Image 1 (cartoon, rainbow, N blue to C red):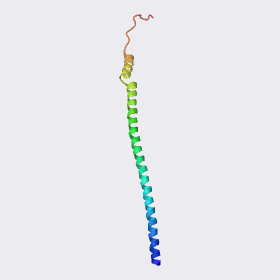
Image 2: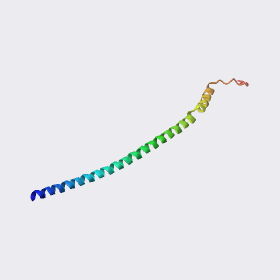
Image 3: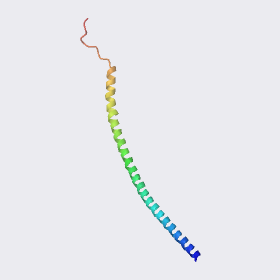
Image 4: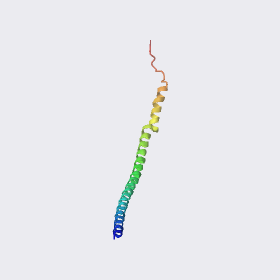
Length: 96
């Protein structure tokens, strides 16, 4: 009879351990599901951020073209060139 009791206790203990393992598996599955959702959200955020970076880069390039672009360079060159151009002598000479 004692052997039967020990066997039943062992069976009960194994059932409890099995239930604990099942609970652990359920918890891990829920964690995996949450992590998968987080990964998906982060991937979407990465795509959005890449698009934002591309837009901001294009905007920055437009500002650079406007600020340092050809028209800006021409006006700077013209001003610099005017510094080196000799003006013709004035028609009214200064008398001493």
